[in-house]
Length: 482
Image (cartoon, rainbow, N blue to C red):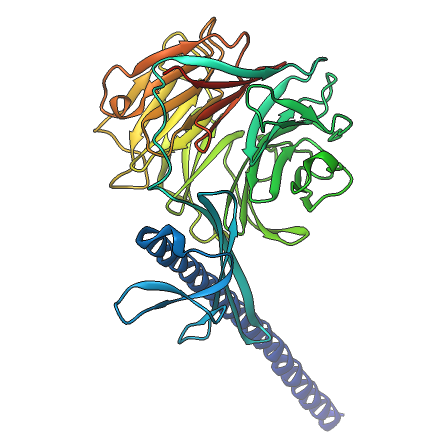
C-alpha cells in the first residue's frame, strides 16, 4: 500500500507540473499577445502621424507654388516636386512617392475665380496590417487679388429673410451660394433651413419641405460636406452632401454617428479627415470625441472627459480650444495632434472669474478669445496669448471687453483686423471690435448694431465681405458701411 501511495503521489506531482507549465504557457501567450497588440498600435499611430506630417508638408509646398504664381495652379490630381531652380512645382505624374513608401496625391478643385480647394492625401500599404490613408483639405485664395475687408466702423443691412413660424435659429455656416442655418425642432422649427444667397440683398429660402427631424446646433460646411451636431437619439452627428442643396433630403445622409447614451451633440469642428464633436455633460461618458471622416461613414477614434458641456471648439496648431460649462475650467485646451490619443495639455486651461459658462471660442495667430454667459461682475470677452505656449497665459493679458450680454458667437476676418461678436445685449446684439487693439489691452469697440433680437450665431464670409447673423426668427446679412 505504501508503494502504491507513493506512485499515486508521484503521478499527481507530474500532473500538477504539466498543468502548471500549461497555465504558464497560456499566461505567456496572453502577455505576448498584449505586447504584440501594443506594438502594432504604436506602429499604427506612428504611421498615421508620419502621414499627417507628409500631407501637411505637401500643402505647404502648394502654398509656395501659389505664392510664386496663382495661375500655375490647375485642376486635377498632382504630385509636387522641386525643379532645377529649387522651386516647388506641380508634377504631371499624379502622385509622389516618398523614400519610406508613402504615396502622396494632391487634388485641386476650382471653387471660384480666385479660390482653389486643395485635398492632400497620404496613403501607405506596407503589409496587410500596416495600411491606411490620411486626407487634409484646405482652401487657397489668390491673396494678391483678394481685397482687404471694408471699413466695418459702421454697418449696413444688406438683406434679410424671415421664414415665419418659430424656428428658434441656433447657428449658421456658409458654403458657396448657400447659407445653412440650424434651429430648434421641438418648438416647431425644422432643425435645418437652407437659403440661396446668390443675391445677398434678397436671400431666399429653398427646399422648404426639408425637416431634419431633430434640433440642430453646431454646424460646419467643409467642401461639399455639411456636418451638423444634433439631439437625434440615434444620429447625433449628421453629414450631408451639399452639391445640390435644393434637393437635399433628410433621409439621404453622407454619414452619421450614434454617440452612446442619452446625449446631445452641441459643437463641431473639422480638420482634414478628423471630425471633432463636443456634447452636453455626461453622467457616465466623455464630452469630446474625434471621428474619422470616410466616404459614407464616420468612425470613432478617441474621446475625453471634459466635465461640462462643450459649447464651442476652435482648432489651432494641433490643439483644440474649448468653451465649456465647467466652472473650474471654462476654457480648456486639448492636445489633438494625434486624434486617436486625446489628452489635456499640462495645466488643462483657464478658470475664469466666477461661475459664468463659456459659450464661444476663436483663435487668432497668437491668441485665443473666449465669450461667456453675461454676469454683472465679469467681462464677457476674454483674450489670452498662446504665442509661447499652447496653454493660455498671462501676462501679457488677459485682455477683456464686456458685451453686456451672453456672447453666443465670435468670428473674425482672415487678416485679423476685426472681431465680430454676436450676443444678447439689449439693442446691441452685434458688436464689431478692433482685434489688434483688443489684444493690446486698449478700447476696441468700433460699432454696435441692433439686430432686432438675440444673435445666436454668426458667420463672416471673407469672399463677400459680409457678416451673416441669425436671431431666433431671422437671417440677416450685414455689410461694412463704408
